[in-house]
Amino acid sequence: MVDLKTTYMGLQLKNPLIAGSSGYTETVEMMKQLQDAGAGAVVLKSIFEEEIMMEMDHTLRESGKEGFDPGVFDYYDYKIKDNYLTHYIKLIKQAKEALSIPVIASINCVSGHEWPYFAKQLEEAGADALELNVFTLPTNTTRSCAETEQLYFDLIQKIKATVSLPVSLKISYYFNNLASFIQRLSDSGIDGLVLFNRFYSPDFDIESFKVTSANVLSSPDELYLPLRWIAVMSDRVSCDLAASTGVHDSEAMIKQLLAGAQAVQIASVLYSSGVHVIKTILDGLEEWMDKKGFASVDDFRGKMAQSRSDNPELYERVQFMKYFRGMDQG
Ligand SMILES: Cc1cc2nc3c(=O)[nH]c(=O)nc-3n(C[C@H](O)[C@H](O)[C@H](O)COP(=O)(O)O)c2cc1C
Image 1 (cartoon, rainbow, N blue to C red):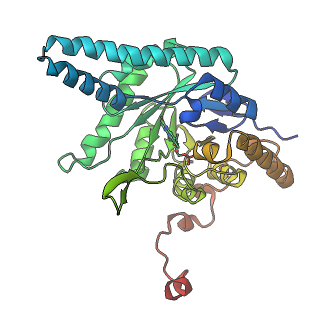
Image 2 (tube, rainbow, N blue to C red; image 1 turned 90 degrees about the vertical axis):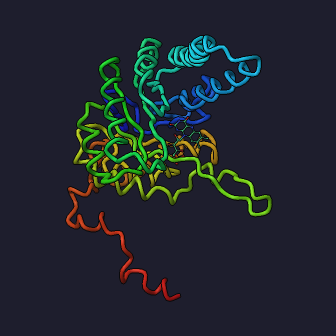
């Protein structure tokens, strides 16, 4: 028998497979199914700052039609945020009652000012940890990289000063000097970093000239970007790393653990294969550990991190050079 137990941000997990934030973690019934299928923890569907802002916008526009009274702004601001928060707090409380695995709340924010207060409420509702998903596409040509990065450090500082539960940050790879940024984030007091978030992308319908949405679900080929960065960074950070994007089977999960991930999140594969895929992935992991003679996850975690490689340059190779010359010509 192999031992799959692990810790992630100080939480005890029966295994390193986490159901990441998605529609599958939006109701307690679905989360119960994820737990029954074997998930080590769940990250709740995020509470979205943008969604709250959009509802505010809509409500204010509607109220404006009858003659805008600036006094209503504060009222709606409070009312709408309170509705969203109340609903989310109820979800956390119900999830905590129904589940025995850790429940990680998730905040998706684009600004910093009110989220420390929200985070406190989520902690009081019983969340075991908090995952912050902070991102705006860097399309603003007047904002410097340093200014963008500072938003993250300010938010972490404010949230860590407000709550005592473990906090992780789910980031994208759209940063200048990514290794340095990841390392500085890990030194900022954050407990975990999730590499990487995957974004909704626009696509074009060339018949109707409409903007549509490109692949909502990831493909297994998307594993390699986070795999490289987990392998490069796992021995250089002072917090736990969780892998996200492109994990669709046990082989992908094993690779991320070999790269040094403390935990691995899945979302798309739940949609394409159903919750039972969790058991299939865990069975595959156990079988592989058994075959390789690893008794616990710690026995092989990080075994293929860049820092432990005899050929660290392979992890930084980006140009095809001679390797695919045949393919180029074909
Ligand atoms: C339908 C769907 C909904 C998602 N909703 C959220 C969300 O609310 N918050 C969040 O941080 N990530 C969300 N994600 C992103 C996933 O948590 C995950 O980071 C991403 O899909 C990459 O992992 P995957 O390749 O296993 O899908 C969502 C993903 C999908 C497919």
